[in-house]
Image (cartoon, rainbow over the protein chains, first blue to last red):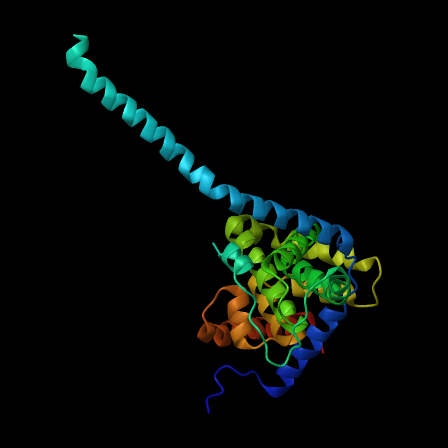
Length: 84
Length: 185
């Protein structure tokens, strides 16, 4: 089995030991409160649901406007001989 | 750019060994308490910026809550690290040139931040680790601290599974060289 991607055993131990020290370094995490995150997520989920419900209306509205304008243009075109 | 939205809206995978329980507020609070500090530490060590770590950790948990609760804690934890890693990758790609230039100053910032409540040698450890690239730090952290499989690391960092072995070897070799240069026993 190839060992091209392996370090020497002592080197591997040194890397592992160093990474254990890195993991143990103290940090001053300032993560937000769980309750705040929960409430924010519920609000986002409600907005997602509202956006999904609104989507068909948002898609159809420009189509309706375009169809109305096309119908008006057709009526005007068909009426032109009578107007002039 | 990593497709974080696709990950956020995709259903969470089930692990047969994990009990599937709905994620109500109390369960989330417990899960958050168990995982948030470790996740923050990972993101901070990889990005070198506490503010970025705050944003990314918050965004990862919000995406977890939006994606749905039907998964065990271990699946949720892996999902969190995957989303957080993808958000980090997005930031790399957005500011890659700036990142390379700031690596040296970030090493000093991280070391200075750690000095506030640290033991002897902690500043040197932090400074040495910060000299690696962000990707090398992420690879080594996921492999050694979180003990992720190559497959999970590949999914988290958006690289091919077969590339992980090579990338990880290079990261370990670079760290080995830094340790020798800095006189770490």
